[in-house]
Image 1 (cartoon, rainbow, N blue to C red):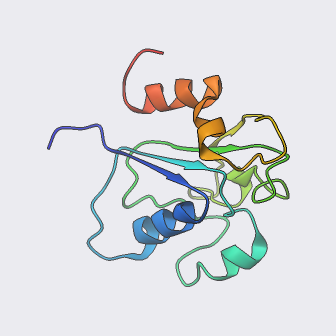
Image 2: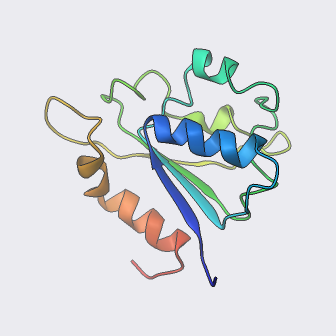
Length: 133
């Protein structure tokens, strides 16, 4: 069907989406990937992405034709330790993941509704979908 096709995932869903895009044979290609509130920056999570994942070549090149946007909040307990994952998922040694620090509000920052209200996230998703913001 006509695209663009963008995978938008949150929290543990980002690990599942990444795993499928990187390691599942026959996984359909997509035009973009957006990970939100992702634990992919945590070393213990990265250890479970092997075989197939390395820092210099962790980008799922075979299935993500366009860009990857990762959105995090420094006070989100799932992403706060390492939300800037560009250095962990390089493409042929180059940092290509667009990282957006979208600050949420309140005591619980991991809420997907709060993330989706963020103007920077919405702008990036509009770009991935080929829409004007």
